Image 1: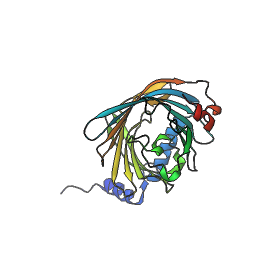
Image 2: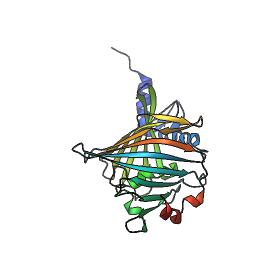
Image 3: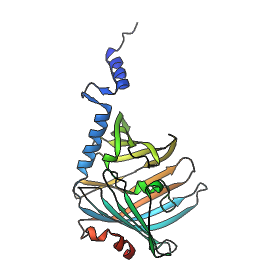
Image 4: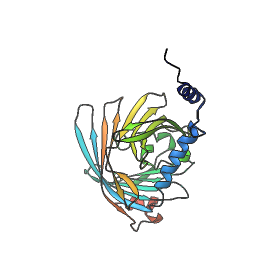
Length: 264
């Protein structure tokens, strides 16, 4: 008779109560620690600009492209600020979105519609809506401040040639379109490689994959590409990032509602 593996039984039992004996911390504490370290490693970049190609693909495989510019200003005291401006095609040219993320309060977002020549505030109840017809929601386009989520480590597992922490985070606010998200973060550089999104009914709604990253300033990792697949509609959106430029002359005056109207 094969002997019972007592250590394995102890590990399984402790998972049920949420304690990891090897570290003396709970699964929630480990999940938070991983998220905090990832945040620390991405603190101090200041600001950057980038170009982006958005490729929309419908369930029949037909594609359309949009070209846009991104500006991001770090705000260590609160959430980061961002400005997204569409350049092509003509029907979306000049459309712009301004976001002021916050660590605990609802994010502030405004959309400038050139055809109407007015700024529209995006209400918190609409943050789950599609961003410009893509499979990314408005809430996906904000900086993901860790204070807005509860965190829980689930397991370690291989991800390609690396090993990833698999963790779950759940929005604290009630206005998110998600009930929970499961992410794969590598243990070497704390880069996100995959995220599964579950809707408020706990159905697997979307999956984000990040095929590759590049390092800038010898420290900060940024995605080259992102693919968001909607499992319910069969649609997908691919974001291709280019021309990252850090330490530009951006300041808070570039992220106001007045600057939103002037964005070109």
